[in-house]
Length: 163
Image (cartoon, rainbow, N blue to C red):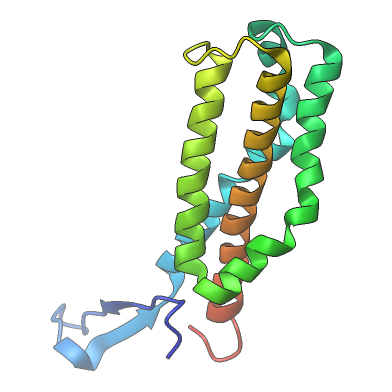
């Protein structure tokens, strides 16, 4: 039995509405697939919606267009690291990789928010751009961990002979 995929047991009542214990137990992977789908939904906005919040970021941090372009590019350049999250998923399993990606993104996006809202001020422009670029790369890697985990779960729970 594969330890990376959870099966959920549920009981179907008989025609009289009675639950007859183990005789009516069934397994489904629907809760797991729903959870992984919902997790995957969290990954796109940070990478692909930069244009939605870039003007606010530019204004609040007084960035030049060139600095803003650097932040956007750094996130997409992180794509060269996209093989590493896949290895982590394969080595440590989908649960651990998803937990690592989700926790990592919580930390990186919270830090990004603190900087963007002025709660953590970085005066030196080069340092600010470097930190925000690094946070963008780490966010991309965290999203790749979550997405890689989602695909691993789907592959393992929706193959031939599954529920």
